[in-house]
Image 1 (cartoon, rainbow, N blue to C red):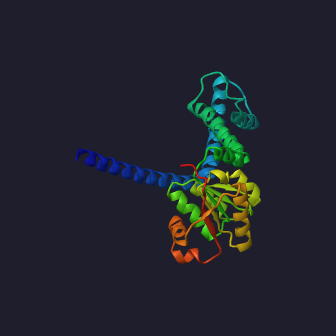
Image 2: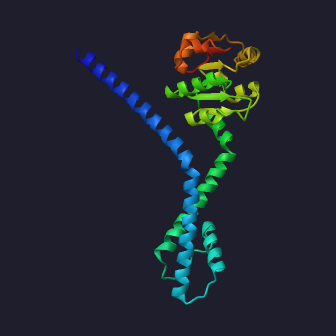
Image 3: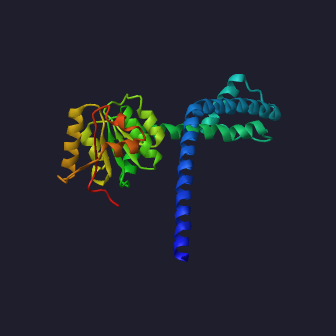
Length: 261
């Protein structure tokens, strides 16, 4: 009896922990979206604040040192704060200059970091894919592909989206949901997405010929191992939409036989 009660408590704890993680991830995604909307206005405002504080701080320090600096000198010194070249001045140093000496390099460093991330973003995603197992691969990013990506991410399933059109407006929404987006040819991207380690494959491009070709390419990369088609109802549950939507356009979905458990 005690064993049954213990199992019940453990099951309740596990269910609570899953709900907690799901809500935490949803909150993280919402905060990420909010930060994306205000990120660069905040960075620009902080950069301007650092520049103005630096200008005031250098002016007051020059007066304290008995130096006669022109506005252009102060302008140049304030700009140099962003590359750590002008902050070392004899005291007394006011709070304005002290704060600017910290704020300007922080803004410059954050901007440089974001630039590096933007350049190497896809390379970073490819590195992450080396460690993924049991993920879902979605080929084609129409309405259904986006719903699938969002529904699977809500269930904490790792998702890779393959889309040949790099200008597809839904790419940003997929990234915001936490999916990895690969743009390029299906054959190459299936290989990069490690289809041999995935659990699900969805071909929902809206083009029957392309969907069939994706199935052939996947089976070829799986060395001919058979694919198990998913019923429409299962696809509807995964993308959290009515079943009739899953009949609304061409699709092909399968559970892969090689997924690691």
